[in-house]
Length: 477
Image (cartoon, rainbow, N blue to C red; front, side, top):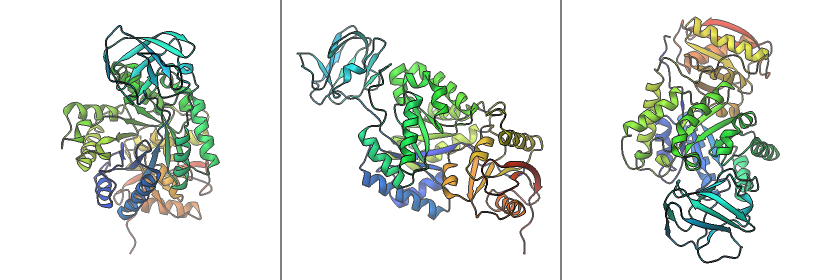
């Protein structure tokens, strides 16, 4: 390739008090942020509305396409505010009850009336960040007796996770309903659902977004044991997934996280779904100006495994070095992409038998065989660019679309440079427009070679049927 390859793994940064000012947003985008995360677990709706508007304004000032991801809080169980601090030892027997039940001395109250109905004989109850952990011994009427498998403290408002829970807890809470309405109002590009348990949860999210008139793409957060066990069906029902390692580590144990992460990334990329790797990627940079070596290796491994994007949470939301964290992540990702093989690269055509998918696969193979400088993919819906991205080609994928929403929704796709352009009237005009875009925005030099796809009609979804090899012309007088 004659053109310097841009970073292909995308960066998601969470907005918060440390980064919501226009000046900080400008610096974040300049450092390499591709998508802004609005964490609905923190802040008021007015704050989220303001942050979204500021992020859009910063993208306009930068002349860049930037995505907006709304991350719903989801159902979160907590111990009651009356819970007294106590240290539980391994082997201790503790009785848990739901709020509103008759409480006996020593009982631990969970702030959810139907808590006992959630628990099954397979369940474990996990407190806080993983300690203490309890195995269910007996479920009787309105009480759950559990034995501590590990020592740790119980205290007011601590989170509690129930593994293998019955599907009694609503996937989308009343708070989430309000946040979904806000996401639709501000035209969020992505909506992530927390604590997903099944494909039905994602179908519910999709139906609600459609009812609100939102075109947002859906992201399933894989953070429960049940979600990982049902990963294939969840992938089918989602536009993308997030490897949310925090709560998964709490539920399954930290030793289970690395293999789950690798397997989840691989399975997502094979079916062409975007995958975000998240949680504590550069955690030390909340208070330090440089990452640890272990953190650098963690980010690099996520990149080499084929993650579409890597995410910063508290590092940019409340951290002391948010811009430095983005720069560090960008540099680590770019360096990791020099690895000879990105392991998440899809094998074969998906879906099998699809003519457009087969044409796009052939375009990628042609670009690779001829060492082209770029793939240029005009796309009405973004599907063509996504179909190429799953193969993790060496070439940048310049996606040309007339729809700004589609452009914003391509910001999380691996290796894709989204460009919004006017709708071409003819295939000949589209070709000229594509070559100029590759030169002026994609950085492909004059006389560089690109592989270009098109259909017989411009702006028509699923009509890709042509592959061309073209050279970049010089600028006119």
